[in-house]
Length: 244
Image (tube, rainbow, N blue to C red):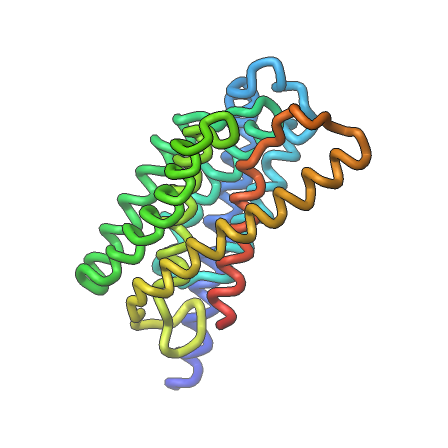
């Protein structure tokens, strides 16, 4: 009987995760015109089409759900969903809308911190704060040092994804499964994860920028959106952290 229950619980939890991801997919289809409108003149880009937005949310959401603990799914899926849509807008218009990174993303960060605070007391909530400090702080310093190369939108996105990655990696499951518990807080792991996110973002951004220059897709003075690389860095950090 116990073995049957053990097998049933993960199945139910994974079904809930799939339902949450599918809800995000449907929401993206319904709200796609509003998201595309945030890009202004870039609203016609193919990656801002209804199905492209929905597909991006589905892929990112499924990956996040697969790599994180189920207790974090609601807030992480909302946060990563907002970041994904913001990065699609950034790729089309070189801007990261505050409505996605600050308002929706901020709600996701608060929910994550409160949830972890209830489950593990202050060490769990600290993983979110550490991730925000590392992700947003490092990019903030770069923005102060060289404003033309780093915008405040990138700083806000770095803080958002740093906090989410910090929570996703900084909360360890001693059983080794993403749907089991209890969770153990690891603030230092959150710091390493947020830092790794930025390293991966700069490496990927540099490689793509060089490729675009060599193929003459952009000029030396043309800006390349950095937001999508921060998102990719976050996913890499999430995968690497949960595999460690």
